[in-house]
Length: 188
Image (cartoon, rainbow, N blue to C red):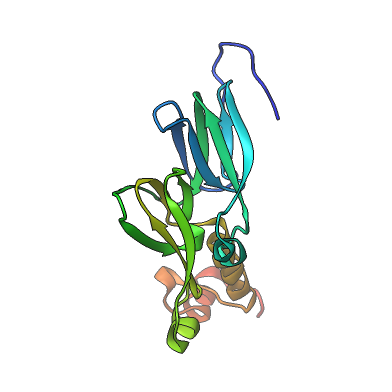
């Protein structure tokens, strides 16, 4: 872990495309929970600890396992999320069900569990998996639209598609024919 003692500006970068969420722990009840590896940096006085999920279902099927990061203290801290960020304040006993990978950070007052989505069609055609995170308020929750695992899956799928010889011509029309004519077919 690096530490800067100067009053100069410090820059830090996210590990993949997305957004950085500033959290002011003094204003958030001095504690916040985050998915593992979302922490970027913090001001002096912020403690970073491991927190375990409270329920066995969340630990086994939650995508992140039993381990979360607990950020505590009174300072400012920054966490990273992929894609767009949704900030949601859950009311008392208000429920929110989301894809397990889309959960970034939440207040310790939020109850976190994993719910099985039954049915053969959901498992086969759902595309998001067969488990959802169920969050019950009260408390603040941050969600992300593009978790790293989904981004990686899309990159691998695109790379695999390109390896199969897919070529695009003008505006994606004509593939090999227009691309070969206008670009000079080098195989002839």
